[in-house]
Length: 124
Image (cartoon, rainbow, N blue to C red; front, side, top):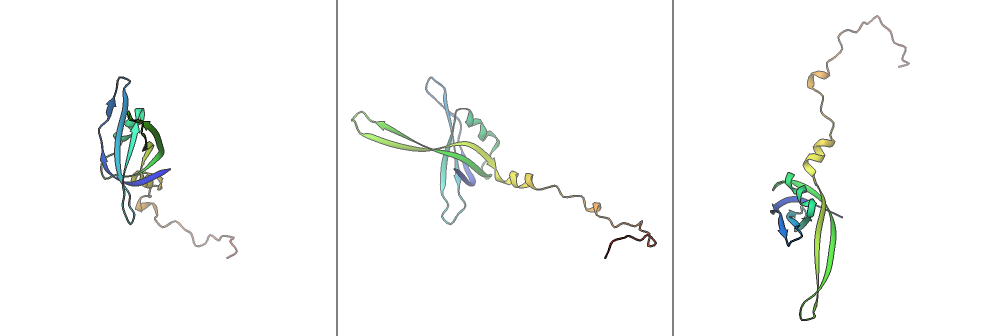
């Protein structure tokens, strides 16, 4: 799945527990009739992917939906969902990078060395 939108916020990398679990959150605002502010978390080595982005960038994030079950001390079962990112692309750069470069304006000069006595054998 993918989410597209404008970066609203990028959080700092957080480290949890003795095992060094790392998490970093980003909020993307979708561009539709009713914009949504979607928080996506990047974990472990994927937190570094956010280093090259800043607020205002238009991005496309590849995500996985995660769900987990937790039983509290009272025996009640609770369910939690998260949106986990695993790739992020700058849409603005990918659009400009896919366009071929424009040739310089002087690349299209008329030919001045034509000889009218030369005949071609084209049928039209």
